[in-house]
Amino acid sequence: MNTVQDEETPQWKKETKNMVKSQLISRGIADQKVLRVMENTPRHLFIPENLRKVAYRDGPLPIGEGQTISQPYIVAIMTELLKLEGHEKVLEIGTGSGYQAAVLSPLVDTCYTIELVPSLAKSASECLKQLGYTNVIAKCGDGYQGWPEHAPFDRIIITAAPEEIPKTLVEQLKPDGIMVLPVGRFYQELIVVTKTRNGINRESIIPVRFVPMVRPD
Ligand code: SAH
Image (cartoon, rainbow, N blue to C red; front, side, top):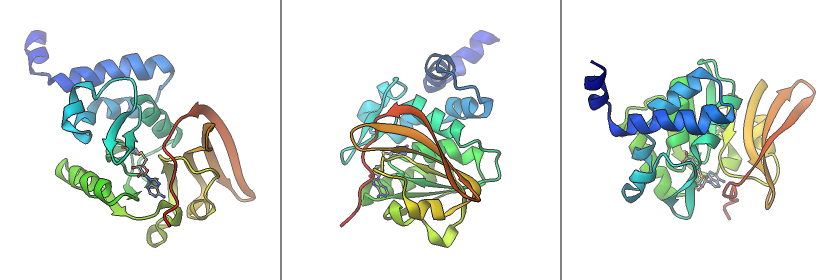
């Protein structure tokens, strides 16, 4: 019986299982819901076809337009840091390939996601639609503006690095809301911002390397 199941398990499922064990659990990702989603999300379908063989490798990969899909561990830790319960309205800045939004989809009520580069915004939204991620709403635009029509958000995740915490996005976060983002120029840190009645709390997590969050001219 086991043998039959093994033969029926698609190759990518074996790879995600392995990735979860060797890249995520081993580095301390412990949220079972996050681990399960990382195991069930087809990362290989969000990257260029010629890179599919290395989709589950322990690192970032190019997705075109000089941009990258984050390393699986970074996607997992950022998702875990959002402390999702399932009812949240989440804003993502930097749709890129759409993979992070796909990981968020089963863990939230709705994920709004904004991408600056039109060709990436288009291919990510087509990919998400094709794979049936109906609670992800994508648009092309400047993330520094946020998405006022849908604000305030329970959570905000930024997957490109601004030099400072963007004020407009803090304003679009609900009280007690959490924002996870990389900040900095040459030296970047992943930080967690919690909005309190008196302002914000900022906690540094780990050093990271993200593409810059661009200010369009
Ligand atoms: N979350 C993505 C990875 C994003 S890479 C994934 O899962 O694949 C960072 C993305 O942020 C790039 O696609 C880049 O074009 C986008 N970006 C940079 N500046 C931006 C801005 N001001 N507003 C929206 N998106 C931006």
